[in-house]
Amino acid sequence: MNSLLILIGKTVSLISKSLNKGHGSTWPGHIALSLNKNFIKDVLAKNPNLKIILIAGTNGKTTTSKLIRTILEHAKIRVVHNESGANLLNGIASVFINFATISTYLNYNYAVFEVDENSLPLVLNELIPHYVILLNLFRDQLDRYGEVNTVASKWQKAIEQLGHKTIVILNADDPQIAWLGLSLRAKRGNLLQEEIASSYFDKLSIPRNDSTRSNLLYFGLNEKTKSKIPQHASDSTYCPNCNTKLSYKSISFSHLGNWHCPNCKDKRPKLSISSVTTYPLPGMYNRYNTLAAVLLCRSLNIELKVIDSALQDFEPAFGRQEIINVNSKKVQLFLSKNPTSFNQSLQTIYELNAKNILMVLNDKIPDGRDVSWIWDVDFEEYLDPQTNIAISGDRCFDMGVRIKYSMEIKNCSPREAGKLKIEEDLKKAINMALYETPRTEILYILPTYSAMLEVRKILTGKKIL
Image (tube, rainbow, N blue to C red; front, side):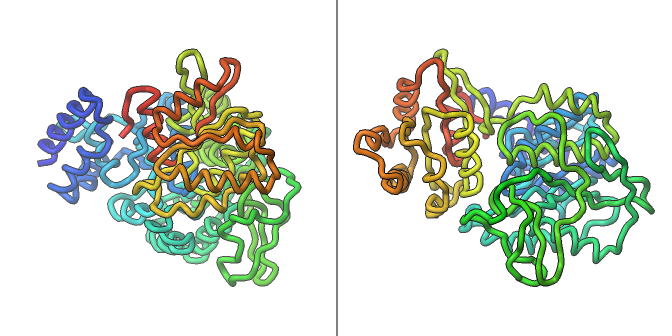
């Protein structure tokens, strides 16, 4: 039965690619799971030596999973990966279909899967991972996921079912994520942990064996920052234990930082890693992604020189600071799908001295129907009135109103406000923005998720999903 499903899935994938309808990253798995709900379990039963790595979080999971894949491949380790970003159960099933033989055999050492926040509990019902990385939780698509606390509660119940053999890697700077580890440690009991010092890491926890190892590892930043007050769009500023307002020694962005509770005395857990020598992508948020990937790979005893070489050779995932050359001009995509990621994109391109920006706001299912979150983005802080700003997408006029108010707050002159242009037709908007971008400069495009896929299709002529 499963051999037939794999054959059908490979055929569907081949047809999809040949017709440029996508990479066959969802439909093969959808068909297989419709005909055999235990398809994933069956394939894993035939491949007991395949180690599973899951990465979940609101922001950064695609970049982190590709970082891990890149490092593992530099270490000559065979990896399968849902590189197209299909992060539901059908995406995982599709990976198995595309990479397995007809007899369901997978000649690989590791499977690296990014997982949708809402789907993590469902995925954990289907498989037992060797590693789980939880990056962060921010408000995103409230109509689908609910508030941050809702997702955190689901995650807590899911990871509490994991056995000691699953190593959980957590972002200590996110109070909700760190609390998952604190509650899990309390449930499991304190496990022994041995630490080693390294010039490459501050302190890195290394698993020893099943009876003595630490299966909770933490990453975070120890960099000194000026801010000790969370941004106004922050989501988790109250203690997950006692609901008291948290205090911070430092904040990297949003609600991430060195936190502690003045009431119950809970605080950021001790970090296993806080810095590396190479960060392949700009932006504070990408430092977290890099730390998570390096911590996992170092716990696999991959050599530091291999890790560093892989980071230097890293190419960004689609839409995540990816650079596309169009008619001798450079376009760089910054996926910006919620207040926190949009703020980080704006801050990063501000530091890159951006002069030409196209923002694309959609309200399709993958984006979330409610776009009121754009009022929580700090446009006033990062947008320079001298910047050429174009706006497109399904909700371009909503974004236009938001930018108009941000300019009024900055007391822009009519001449400066005239730099703002709105074009409903996305292809026309891209061509207009490219025309106004000099060859010596970069056009920065900040799209929501479905808009990013549309932009890439226009720029490259190829679909991702």
